[in-house]
Length: 143
Image (cartoon, rainbow, N blue to C red; front, side, top):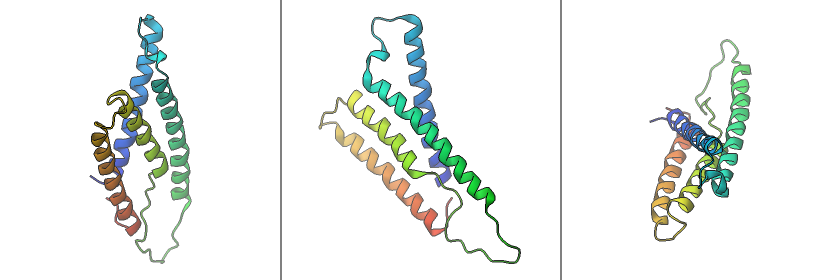
């Protein structure tokens, strides 16, 4: 799996979380259940943060696209592979994962230290893999 695939995977995770929570909020508004997801402030906060992350990702991706399109290489000049052209805007990707993992930690595992080993190891693995892909990109060999 390359850097582009892991970026696409994280963005799809963002879109899935926004779509799922949005569906649950609208379902709750339409049916007036006794227990509603709209009563849980942490889920509502996750939804609003993910909406903000998606608009930030859109803005930074558009600026990256514009910089790639407007760059030019003069005829006869040599290019040296020093960096990759693909920029996944890592701060936004990390914010997406941070919001999801913090909500998982409190909602599924209850924020208890006995279960934090699972989320800790999983987060460490993801950070390690993203770090490797960023290193490969900076070396000029993105997948």
